[in-house]
Each structure stands twice: as structure tokens, then as C-alpha cells.
Image (cartoon, protein in one colour):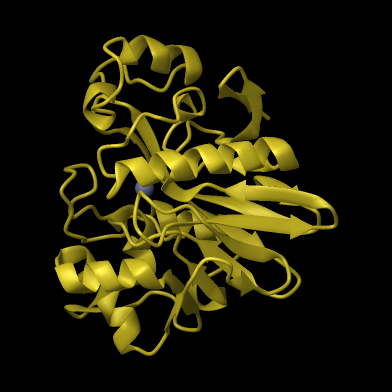
Length: 281
Ligand SMILES: [Zn+2]
């Protein structure tokens, strides 16, 4: 188990932990010493061999007294992807992590996608006899309505492979920020990375934690929230959401689970000057 929020168990479902693009490529509007700033505020997150930022891809499994909830469904197998490390991969890491958490695909009550990018919706479906079918047969899939509208219109392999089959199976429920799943899980709006992007607030017995999704990608963005990530759909809005989320995390004292943060990805945010500082748990 990764941690407990009150009585809610949180399990890490780690699928990958490999370098992708370089910091310069990932944050095109960062200052020229981006690499040094990353080393200072996210130490050890740059891969020495490739110069790429190591970006874990993970979901979080929540076991509440009411439901078993998977927050984000990672990359998946056999999926079309623009990043080579993610493209058409086939391995059992995601499923093994679920097994280690004591659940099988049929046990999941809800799949909650923070947004509908390929590394958060991939295991929504799997390829069976040449057809994409929902991986979790008994789950309701909660997806941001605005993301669904945008990506349905754009079409493209990620939507066709990982979202449309869930809609066609009647298992999808399009939701908007503020939506509550049971008594302890709330979607809070953090638009910008995608239009419907939501971070996930978990509350139980006075304990509170937030799963960032892609409102941030690295702990360095606590210090530099104004850095726009290359895959932000609307960089300016993402910056505003990031600052709001960081400010709220400080004010409320939330535990923070950074979806793509360097492992162990769990800590807290402190205010420092005009920005924020990351403190690992
Ligand atoms: Zn992501």
C-alpha cells in the first residue's frame, strides 16, 4: 500500500518509469538553465544516459468502504502513441500491480480519468480478438465531459481505441468538475492541460489528499508553475490552474500525490516567496 487517507487505502499502480523528452523539449517557455532548475527542485529526475526526464506513468487505486476506484488508466497495451516508449507496447506491469493490490479487473467499481490523454485512459480498453473492449467489465467509467467533446470531434487513435469503445459499451458517464464519487472523492477543476481536466480530492476522517493528474508533471513546477508543458492544450489556463491548486494545497495542508512526479510521488507543498516548494513524505 502506498498510503492511507483516513481509512481509505491508496495503492500505486505503476506501469512505467522511463525517460521521455528532455526538459528543454517538455517546457519550451522555461528559462535557459531549465536543466539546473530541474536538478535542484526535482533531483534525480533527469536520466543521465539520455538526458530525458524520467516520467512515471501510474494510476492510483483507492479502496473506500463503498467502492474500489481506479484513478487513471495509464498507457495500456497495443495502443497507438506518438511517444516511442509508449507506442504498441505490450507488458503485464499494470495488471501485475493491480494483482499486487489484491484486485482483478472485475473488482473495479469505477474508473476515473483525470483527463482523456493516452497515458491516463489507455487501460480503459484492451484488445480482444481484434476488438477494443472495456478492460473492467463491471466498472462505470467517469470521464470529463469537455475532454470527451474535444477528442470525439478531433477523432484520432487514442479516442477511437480507449474512449469510444467504453461509450459504445454503455459504461461511460461524462462528468463535470464538482462531481462527487461516493462520500469521499471529489473532482476539482484544473483545466488547461485539457479543457475538462480534473484533479481528485480525497477526504476521510479529517485527512485530505489530492491526486494532481497532469495539472503538474514534475515537482519542479511547484517552483516554476509558470512553465508551460508541451502537451498543455491551453498553456495559460494550465498555469492559472496550477497556481490555484498549489495555493489550495498549501492552505488546506493537503497531502499531494503527483501523478507523474518522481517516485515516491507523495509529499506536501509549502509556500516559498512567490512560489512553492516540494517536500517529499
Ligand atoms: Zn500524463
